[in-house]
Length: 441
Image 1 (cartoon, helix red, strand yellow):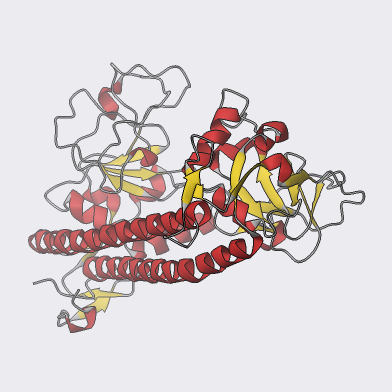
Image 2: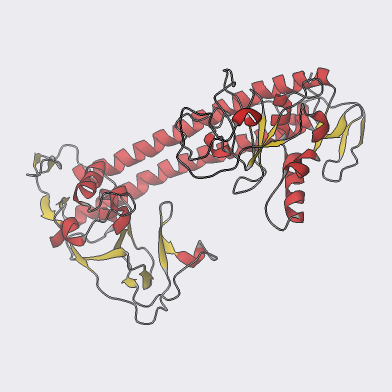
């Protein structure tokens, strides 16, 4: 990607008259959005909650779009159809969110097909149809991604008692724009450049997934086959486990683990929580304002090297060893186990239980039919068999995994950093082009 510093600038600039915009090219204008539209900004129909009829036009939410602005066809909404003629969308229409978690976000509606009968939009969205004589929809879409737009949004939200940007406020949005003859050059330039950047980001995201997959394969092979590829193998006697090193044992978990029954008497122990990213952590260090129970009395006690899992999410492999060097507590809905000695470091089981074969067993043995209400009880867990290497081999396996997964993690972090830099460059490029800081020729 070429650097912005090397790109040409306009010869003359003027004060825009708006604090958060600053200077703009001499021949550019700042115009309230309402004067650049084909019609007034429109709200969609109100939500109601009746069953959605797929034969009727669809209501659109910001979250119904994929990253390229195309409607996600698998989206299922439960909204009432209410004379959609006034609410139908045209290709290129911009949808602004006026409330909710996505307030101030926007999407350009693109289908590539006629919109005469297929699509409508929900009441928390506002439709903007540009007047093609003054402004293209593509340009407005890029402008809504700019830092200037974000600065305006923050000013509006800071003035409001609730997070709500209505049509009256969007109508006054100051849009920086050049003459129409330059707009097409800018949008063509940004289309090309952002597509290249998005493609580069996609490639790096795919590389991250591949690295994660290879890391998981390395872990699975180590904890189920060991490190010696030449070691003699034997049938484990358990069909879904298959062959294991001949010198390993097979034991059911009831011989590996004991359930810890200790409960908090005072509720003063640090409250711990599960994090898919960080493992078992002290809750206050990650969610200082999160809602918690009024009392932690009768919570389950956890010691270092205990294995903790959420009974409701065992089918997702949510097992973590506690590496916290002090006593803590967890919700009574969690299960806490300590080692009987055959597995000295329960990190080994945490890694083993990521294996799809074990997750399949958790699902088979769990009780319940609705996700979120599926529980894996201790008796069913303890009936599962695992391969058990000698203790010294367990330690070698864990050391090997630590060493090699660190290399994968480093490579993943590098890719993530590069993605962030690409996103920053993309944002700066868009902002520079739609505010005239660079001259597109």
